[in-house]
Every structure is written in C-alpha cells, then in structure tokens.
Length: 440
Image 1 (cartoon, helix red, strand yellow):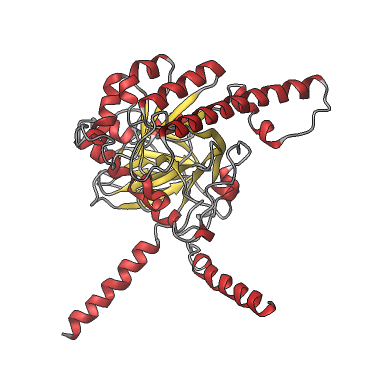
Image 2 (cartoon, one colour):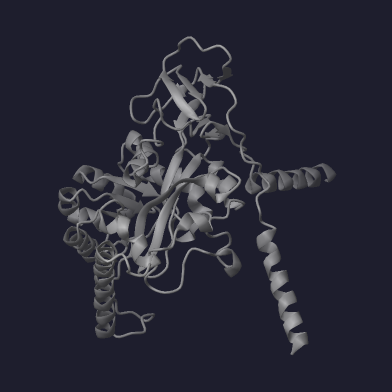
C-alpha cells in the first residue's frame, strides 16, 4: 500500500513538471523613471482622428499630452518613431487568460469551480502571472484582457488584467467588472449526442432559471437581514452578490440564442440590474430590445461557424457590422473555443469583421475603446488621451494586418519585453534549417 502511494506521488510529481516548466522567463517592466515622448509617428487615439507626425508624452505611467509636435520638457526621453504607428493597447473583453495554460493538462486549468452557484469566485486571485501565454499575447499588441471564470450557472466575477507584472496584484487593473452567468439553453436540441429527452432538458432549464432567481432573492433577503438585526451569519456567496443586486456591477451573460438573450434581458429588467451579453450570435434579431435597455454585446469570436444550416456562410463575419447598423453597442472578443492560447489573434477577428463590412476605424475601436467602455474602464484605458494610463504600443503598420509587427509596448508607462516562447522557437528552428542548408 505504501509502495503504491509512493509510486502515485512520483507519478503526479512527474506529471506536474511540464506545467511548472512553462513559467515565463520574461522580466516585467521597470516603473517609468523619467518622462517619455514618442515623436514623429502616426498617432491613432481611437477616440479621434489619426495625427500624422504626432507626439505622445507620458509621465509616471499616465499620458500627459497627445497631439502635434510641441516643445518637449527637459529631462524627457525622446524616442523617434517616425514612419511607425502608435496605438492604445488592444483589449479582449472575454478570455480565460491566466487561468488556463494547457487545455489538456488538468493541473494547469483553473477557470471553473465546482457547483452551480459561485458568485464569490474572483478570477484575478487565481491568475498565474508566469503564464507563457501572457508574453505571447502582448507581443501582438493585446495588452489588456478581461479574465472570466466559466463554471456552473453563476460562475463568478470577471477581472480586467494588464499583461505585465510580477504578481496577480500587479496584473489586476480592476478586480471586478461583472458577474458571469452561463444562461441555460432555452431551445432543447434533438441530436445523436444529446442524452436527455426534450422534456427533461426543458425541466432542467426551468429549474436553472428558478435557481438563478432564487439566488438573487436570497441575496436581497440576506442584505435586509444583515441591516435589520446585525446577527445574520456572514455568507460569502450572498455578500459577493451585493454589488450586483444593488446595480453597481453588471451581469455578463453567455448567450447566443435569441430566446436566451431575450430571457436574460427580461431577467435583468425584472431584477433592476445591468447586463452585458457575451456571444450574441442572434443579438441582431432583437436589436431593438438591446438598444432600448442599453445592453451591449461582446461578440464572442468572429471566427466561428454558422449556428444553423440555413444561415449565410458569412453570418459570424458580418455580425459586428449588422450590430453597428442596428445601433447596438458592441466589441469583439477573439479567444473563442481555444481559449487563452488564441487571445493573441484578437486583431485578426476585427480584421475579418472589417473585410465583411465593418468600417476599419470601427473595427479598431471594437478591440480598444469599445471593450473599455463596456467593461467600465474607459476612464483609464482604451484610447490615447490625456490622463489615461500609458498602456500603448508602437507598430510598423496596421495591427489588423498579419504582417505588422509590434516593436515597442508600454503598460502603465513600463516598457515591457516583447520576447516570448513563439519567437524563441522560431529563432531556434530557423537556425536549425540554416545549418541543414549550409551542410548540403
């Protein structure tokens, strides 16, 4: 028995080696020690028109000037970026970056808690600041992400991370931006892979909705009891829901079907809470409802298949433009089904939307300022404006094009390393085939 335990312990220790071995060796940026001016490049504030031969000046991590050329204060480090382009850091509004390293390695996956009701879960405290995926992501100009727990009915609270820092505290820009709810499917599907009959699945959906409403009712009752008697035992779940039931923190509802979106909005109106729809495949079909109740949509992945056989092949690609035309506030997320490893491709989701009708300026806005506005952090990030964080990057072209390279990046004024595992492997195998060719 003891021998088997020793063997099991050795096995699990061996199994954990690839996970610990994936820690990122990149050193976080040092705090800004002197003012920095990026001079001569084309500045794209996003909140306004592009500025040719512009200047971006920042001090102590905050932008102090954006505009045409002007006298530079003494003691400023001047960086000539002539011929290049300056953009605010891109932001993916729905990811599991930092919570998942390798999808197939259970020890590196920490995006879901057990149970159905977990409003007390806070994503940022579980983030791995040494994730290899963080340098890979920021190398492509994605400097901000919303990391979202995903398990159960009420999954927990999402946090916005800035992709540089020693600890999860350093990475956390805002610890709570929304409470994630996985809205149950309202339309039972009959297919070979579905085990339960339609009636059972309808009952399951109805029970989930009752549980959700009961959770809100219990959270309110808990608060009244705490205020009235003061002897109500502390309950971490209902305590965590107080900002939500008070209307200070929105629900982020995963919903693609029309009936899901309509039910989620109805629930939010009935409970007097704000709601953000993530996924939103059918959102354009209830655009009037979303506009009337000021419900924004995080378009969950432009690179996805049509949901129905009779949908246009390009329905997912045109969704952002159709939402724009309908007057629905939206942004684009790019993590999709492959999760954290795919966040780096965020600009190409926006590029595909632009190729299928979305104006190019709106496509850039959909991955910078719009997600910041939807997540409630636009006072700090999302555009290049005086007073905002100096979280930005310099590229040699349009970031929506795959050939463009990010050459310099800053997070709150800290210059971050743009080396990553992908680049190191590319250099390694480039050298391998260079030697092979030379030996021939």
